[in-house]
Length: 305
Length: 290
Image (tube, rainbow over all chains, first blue to last red; front, side):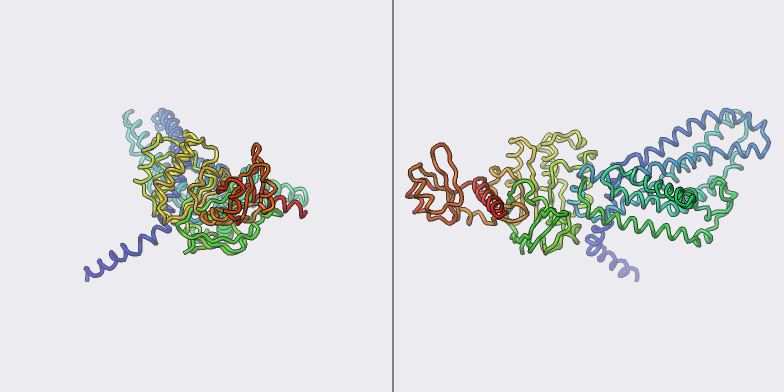
């Protein structure tokens, strides 16, 4: 049975895959690589943020042996855990800042320098090009944030263990407080539910403006939002729009209990059902899809600026 | 099969009509020069052919609709839109990697072979290359693509004459093989007059002349006469007349070579001279009706 089952797919592979696979996967893969060549800040910024943080952390661990002797147990737990939350938060903010500037430039820069005429001379569809660009904030940046955060947290744990051992103390206590594996899983969950899915409409909006604006994409992305909030405030003396945006930016809280606490604390519980049942999630994703589809059409129609 | 077939091709930007109903058929294996002044609609026509802009009318390029099938079409079409469009942040080696990655008919070895003849280093950034080198690089890329149609829009604009000469030499010697089709736009006509098999004159969104070179050579004659013969020559209805020192130079459409030969020297006019005659005449006629 084994032999015919094996040979049939192989013969199919050689005949049908080259044309079919070439049409989608290869152009997508190379378009993605191209983005990473052009925008090196996508990985350099998180690495630099983590490196700077680790230097600060290393200096602060000098106090750790003294703190272990003097602090009460809850205070010590707080002291040990805070930097792990902090590095995760720092890298998330870094990724959001990189994502903001990346998305605004991704479809605008190629028109500004007219290189779009070169990209369009190659057999890569506008859909493939835009999807490759969209995968930067939706896939690449979250993965880099995750990998760099986890690596930094491991380095932190090993560094502080080394400091304790160097001072003749046991590092066991540290390893009972810091649970890196559950923390990593929570981090991944938080990144997907909040930074990818919940924040998706922001990135969709930025791509749309990037594809539409001739210049000053940042102003076009921000000013209409400020204007709407401002007009609403003057006309009705309400701030529903501003509140709505604030909730969107700081939100995604439905994904976990204990909203407001640091997300990677293993004490929180995921509430996936409640999160998936939130209409705002699906409305936001639909808005994102519309923005990206519009960006594809704009890339087709718009001439270089 | 026709490489390009257009019927009633029209394109307007607001109230400006860039293409005013173009009909065109170009067979494969031809080298077509589209000649026209700035704003004639040359680039708009090419953009429509390359699927870069929507249009009215019907257009088939290698049997495909360029607007809806641009990505498939680009497997068989290579183009240089403008010398300055290669991404300046990229390294030469990255550019080769990328094109090899996305283009099924690109030969990296061939491109490197062309580049080896230039001073371009593989690890150089494009922003550090001179304008001539960027053109050489772009040409090396498109010549390494086994395309059926090559489109060049003002390919030598801003290049010095040495590079221009090299450009056309390598295009003819290393690339053109009678099965491919090449479309070039320019307003520097003289340089590639000898390359062309077909010529189109465009002005204000219209085709004023569409001819093969053989047709062109049999149809148009230029007569150089002494002042005393000018009146006799004028009676034969030239389409254009100008003075060069004390000689009269008259252009005839469908003139009789023997009849003209009796009045003075007869030769085939250069494309540039005929262009001035045809486009000048059309513009004059248009001005008169206004």
